[in-house]
Amino acid sequence: MTSLPTPVTASESGPQLMKALAESVGRLRAHMCLLEVQSSPTLDGVLPRYVASARNLIHYLALRQHDIRLLQAQLAELGLSSLGRTEAHVLASVEAVLARLQQLGADVAGPPSPSGAPVSFEEGERLLTEHTAELLGPQPGGRDVRIMVTLPSEAATDYPMVHDLVTRGVDIMRINCAHDDPEAWAAMVHNVRQAQAELRRNCRIVMDLAGPKLRTGPMEPGDRIAVWRPRRDTQGRVTEPARVWLTAAGAPTPSPSGGAVAPLPDRWLPKLRLGDRISLVDLRGKKRRMAVVKPGIGGYWGELDQTAYVGPFTVLRAGRRLRSRLGDRDDTTPLGEVPARAQVLELNQGDTLVLTAAPIPGRPPVFGPHGEVEHPAHISCTLPEVFADVRVGDRVFFDDGKIGGAIVAANAGEVTVEVTQTGPKGAKLRADKGINLPDSALHISGLSEKDREDLAFIVDHVDIVELSFAEDMDTLTELMDYLAAHAGGRVGIVLKIETRRGFDRLPNLLLASMRQFPTGVMIARGDLAVECGWERMAEIQEEILWICEAAHVPAIWATQVLETMVKTGLPSRAEITDAASSERAECVMLNKGPHILAAVGALDDILRRMQEHQHKKSAMLRELKVSSGVLT
Image (tube, rainbow, N blue to C red; front, side, top):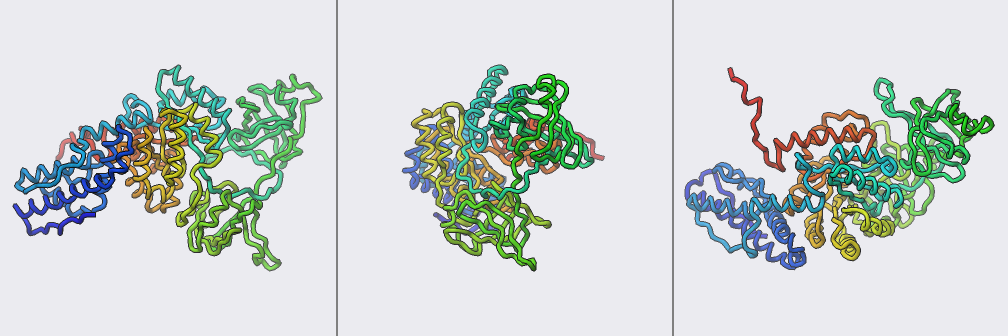
């Protein structure tokens, strides 16, 4: 790396000042050209349409290898560009400053660019716009930023909901391969394509490969009691009824959303109709009534407005209309086998938790007669091979960072963790919760066997594939080779950056992915915040946006956008500010939830308003009505 000259001092002026500034900026330019030459083997493998963008990314990386804050201030004092808004056209920005310094009397000289003219100001904007359209579809009318929504399981059977999402302005539908199955995915794709055709509106479909999920294993079963509980606001009013999946006890179909299940006699299910009523007396002696509200694949959805505690012998009684179809002899039935509730581990700071390699169901600690811990709490993990990569002292986080700890002992069979971080009242750890090991260099394959099976569906049905936990070059190469062989360039790639190693390797991952067009990046802020630390999340988010703009690839702003609004219908003030900031990305992702339609409308309005005021890091100086007030 070349070094900048000694910073210009405040006492220097006139020709000396111009000379020193020109020398500093010239050395920046020389370093950019040198790194471009050194990167020739990488550039040779990039698709022709990405070569200019790859060169610009390399120029930006060269620029950011220096601390030029003092130089920026000195250039700004002269009314010149401070080089703070150069991402899309780095070398052109530097050369523009040099040209201006030459006009002011500086002697400017340097080698020509090894590849001719750099990416111009206009070309940088154009390339980002073109690459975004290639991956994410045409720009929506009146809005610069696309909106992506994760589809719930109900999207397989609820076409009106999908139609409404497209109507409201959703540009990309996301299907998570970690949920549902190919039959449900195919139904979702069909519904999206049908809505797209009916509304004559473009809507891309992306599928998210689950990746090697490091999660907690199962827990020992507890009692066989289910609680069907509606959501309520702070005043006790029901905001969302309890939803129960009604399925046949003899051949049950799992709940599409993983929620409550009510096994019914096989003879009942074919007789159910929308609007039917089913009453019961729960385990506390409370009378409750359920309405049948929606059909699904292999069952129906029922809803209750009051909490009900039920067990295997809770008696269900058919309402009048259902009873007329069943007959009086069949109008009552005991509830089928209620799944046992999984236990939870209640953890506090200072507790010990053992992670086991063997798939032993987790269980709480065992206490002795005097309250001493005889056996600490334990739970297995889904990828025990990582035990070979962890070391004493490495940090470990569970459930999106809600629980933190440090490894105090490790071997091939188990890892002992001292809990160091919980809420003030402790925290509950359940089965199937994420585990993050930010300090450990894990040697696990990025594509699981399930991912490889899911790819066969993806290449035939959707437009984009998301690579979860993108950090490994071999995994990216395997994915690109598969797409090249089976998709013929029809399927684009989105790199999900959700680990520290993925962030550190982002430039190299982008340069590699430029061999498979089109390409984008998702800022997966949930896992990334856990891996890098919440206090660094804003900084890292900005850096990813800058690198993506320098590479002219679209960035997707994801995780917890308007999350409270999606769940409850009302956003928090912080969420509105976050959504406004998301305008700097090319796409914003909303997660699924009961109020998703309202959240899409709110996000659409926020993005349209903000694009009048902000583009990337630049303020757009449109007329402000407040400025027309009379000063007195």
